[in-house]
Image (cartoon, chains in turn cyan, red):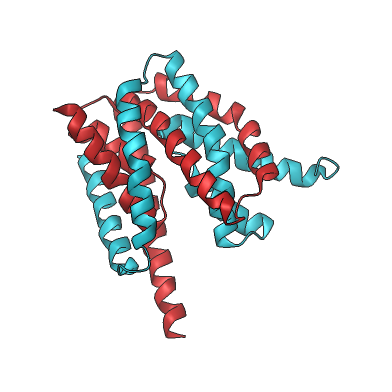
Amino acid sequence: MFDDPQRLLKLAVVGTAAGVFSGLFGVGGGTIIVPLLIVWFGYGEREATGTSLAAIVIVAALAAGGQGAYGNVDVVKGLAIGVPAVGGVIAGTALQQRIPQRAVSYLFAALLVAVALELLI
Amino acid sequence: MDIVLVILFGVAGGFVGGMVGVGGGILFVPALAIVLDESQVEAEATSLLAIVIVAIAGTIRQRRYGNVRLEDAGVIGVMSVAGVALGVVVSNEVSQRTLEVGFAIVALGIAAQLVHRASRRVDQAEA
């Protein structure tokens, strides 16, 4: 890999973009990483998601460390959200095939629009 | 009381995220900021810690299915340092209002991505 500077450069661009996103908005950056892995590197959707998750461990840890240096991280609340969320993800992923995913996607999109409006108004 | 709400949001956020394939942050941040009344930057910072935990668990699961290319992931992660530093500094320098508006735009972008993916799925099913 390291003898292919162009590929390395592209990975650096993905990392930098995800990093800005993560540090600035408190998200993992999967929204950026997944599509770029698919379009630039020819990843399949599952591989892109899996690889993105592994990258996010590092990106989000760095960002959490940076925000922690500013004293912004509430460790108790972070753990109280993160640990139960693992159970939620496992249940959600398991039920994925049994629930009309399209309807959930639309509902969820509507929820995000509501969040955006709440923040904007 | 707060902590019970926080745990409930964690479970609900993880559940919906796992079902539709989005990360936790886009849910954790508004839960902390809007419902639990933390400042936008504090909500974002705390969300990051939760994301690390969820992403570790997700990586372990995905790795079992052979979906993780560790080398690429490692390079992306390490190369994110400069971007992360920039993002963290900017988030602490700009006004809360600016950060809220920025986050609202991100939420709308992810909503659009979700609708796009869901509608594409229909096309495939019908094709």
